[in-house]
Image (cartoon, rainbow, N blue to C red; front, side, top):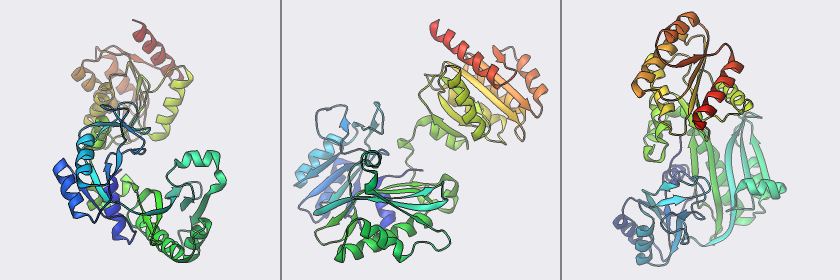
Length: 400
């Protein structure tokens, strides 16, 4: 689960991470009021969307104008910036061409920046350890730094048995060339960041840029926090921060139905039970010349209602011109899948080719249900046969 920058900073502040003073605003009037509460004389007005690159982004209504992060010298400037941003569509490298509507702002106090750095905490699955990555190249895309200057990225993996120790924090601070008060502040910063990451079950904490101020304090000028959805039951306060307006509508519906769904760019919808089988299904679609439109895992114990919801989510994507259902029945029974497919197909008036491959528990019952449904459903004998049939049928549908 993602949250907004202002929410992330509020959480990090509870753990002792230094952040600039700031106040969220939902209206222009609230933005002006926020600026009047801050020390000044400089203010920063920041668009709040679940995407990076806001400062370099452009608004659809003014593509030649300023981006989604603006430095303001007066309260009137804050008012003008808020009016220009709120309810406009911001396009960044992470939103895609459709952009994202700005419905929240964050007004922060200006900070005297001496130097910018990059800092992130992630779970490195290769080592099964929480890992810090820091760099002197702050404010830049870490992917670009990794490609052009990999030697400028310093990594430090933390043993889960010992947790983060002082020498870990010193290694990171020395690696950035910090000294004196800035060194001491950085050590405290890193220790606090680690505790926040672990305590809140984060999947990533990214600070870009992390800065050293004119007072030699290390501070988070930005903050991106993602959380492990599977651990949110332990953090109802964090779950309450969810902003559904920032989520893809289908992905939101899928989450409500406890389905794993990710929209992709292709035109063949996929419904599968099991993440590994779903990946294999998408791979074989591409092998036969097609492009998957989504990843959708209905799980091992889905009900007919959940299968119906999954099917409707797939078909609600206007890019979908064909559907492949690939089910291996274990806990999930093939007859339940068949009933769900038929219920959904009737409800949405199926108008695209549908290929179904069933194997496993109650497979014959499932095939019989599909065969006797009276719907134009194509059965497949195996996964390769299914992929070939759905790719061919989709191409014919597009050519028609």
